[in-house]
Length: 423
Image (cartoon, rainbow, N blue to C red; front, side, top):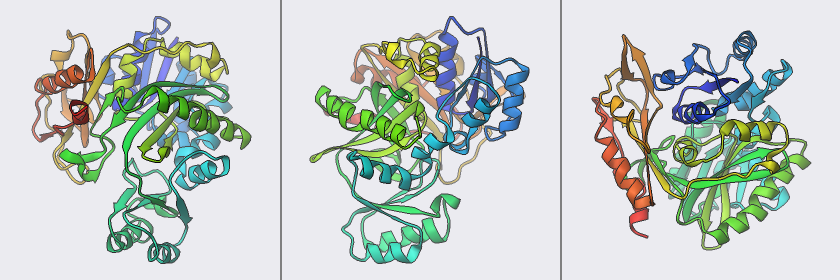
């Protein structure tokens, strides 16, 4: 089979790495890809949002299956464009990807179908939002309605911060059109867990759990980012919690989307908060999480192509989804200054160290080839992932592996998975 993977980040590198393991795959292309992906796939310089060119390329190369990685093209209808051209493609259609594309939509869906989530209100003008905040309890959460690279969420400890947040989202349009509408939500406390699941429109099968670290600095301080590291599985996601989530969240969400005429086919990402009052949904995403994919996919035993084709064909119920009985930890190596401002273009040393190491991975996120050398090209540069017999071992292995890589401006959090040690 010939496979095309759309995207250029660490998530797409993890997907390509899994695809490359499949005995069914003969050629892999990536659009646009990155320096790491280029070692496994032929990269083509086509934007993830240029659907006409992507479809034309898939036809020209007789691609058997296209996998759409990022949120933007999914929400904009990339899958619909491929299907309209008679091409096989993995990912949710536009009318299903709205579960990520609009936070207001997903909150209203959960309210309508009794899926547990935080109390909230939706607003489409700043004056109404400000009036609501005058009577609200704090801390409180403000969320830009649309896509904002995982950064459109503000936690405000008092009214002054919340007013500034409304200005930032709705008036100054810090997150662009994503802030045309806004969700104001109760602040929940507890353990965050991410659960990815394969879906075929009717059946949903969950992958192993993971936990992301969103804040830029140690101790969960600093600004929200696209993710500074992950571990899998989460020790806080117990069998009892899983049993509750299967019935009250995952199956209900699939049924709700079907009832709305929005059959969800692809990967559903559920961000959960395990609170004292039970487990609730923080958010839904319509694709693999990044960097969650970098700890979940290396632990998957199945051939990823078999699973994705079963989703497309509505036969996911025939798949026995299995994961290794071990653990994985990913530490993101970023450019110092991320997520605000940072320099790029620095040569990266030590990448070859990973080539002969089993259970160690380096997934490229913000890199490019410049005159035959791999250089930094983004805020999040690399995801260093290691496996181990348990989380403590995997964490030690991952941090050891971060020492093998060097580039100017290298920055990382030093407490990814620290909660594991406190168990």
